[in-house]
Image (cartoon, rainbow, N blue to C red; front, top):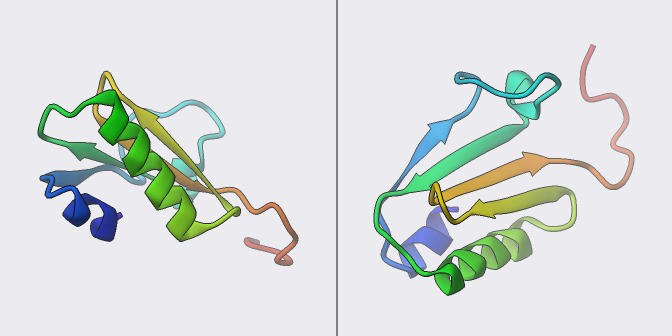
Length: 88
């Protein structure tokens, strides 16, 4: 995320990890999802580029979403292959 935000010369902050209000079953509750908020107003084109660059950097086991209205990037670990047990 840092590499992509720096590429676009944007000010951003992690806005949600374990804390905050999330839907039941959210991966935030188990530390597998994080949100970053961009402070500047940006175009939809830049938002789409941020999403795609982060997705390309992280690979297929991560879902990456961009919310243009909130200027928020959501990243969650969603393995597409088996890694064995991830928890208790």
